[in-house]
Amino acid sequence: MLALPFTGTWLVENSPARRVPSHGTHLFASTYAIDFVAVEDGRTAGIRDWRTAFATEPADRFYAFGRPILAPADGRVIAVHDGEVDHEARRSQLTLAHYALTQASRARLGAAGLAGNHVIVALSDAGPYVVLAHLRRGSISVRPGDEVTTGQQLGECGNSGNSTQPHVHVQVMDSPDPLAARGVPMAFRDFRVWPRGSANARVVEQGMPGERDIVAASPPSSAES
Image (cartoon, rainbow, N blue to C red; front, side, top):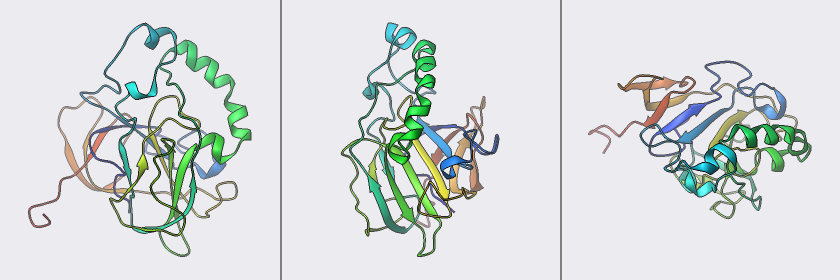
């Protein structure tokens, strides 16, 4: 069972509650992966202008960029990759179409091209293994061998790898090698969810949020605080 790896409100995309495989492929152990995009008042960025419609945009326009990404469970860091650039973001259909044409070239680069800057955490000596991907270059604060606890900052949200706007990609695998691993189903605990189109939140003790839901970690109860 995982905690949400962030604070604040985030929009769910590519949820395995909608379809499996969630990202349209079983490759790279992404069968049950999920994406989260930070939002404020339902928006992913505070600016919309001509670039939004016709060009790429600076990644730091988006609320997710630079937000802390937290360990979703206790575990041990087994792999870290840093150094990939944070791309310009794309909301324009023109730029998204061009980006889709370059998908194969990123896939040929393997984990670096797809996950970008990322951290893999083993939840026990025998796994499973949690991947947090698309982190901001230079932001990762842990190293292989580090023991981490739930809620500890691992890095910052970025736009590296196969990413069209800043977001965090989470998946669980049965092997530390994404080229050989299979995806593992996961669930999150203790979060609030605003289902798509609803202004009312409900608390979920255990589950998987749906496509286009907005989620936030539940505050601790008075007994826990």
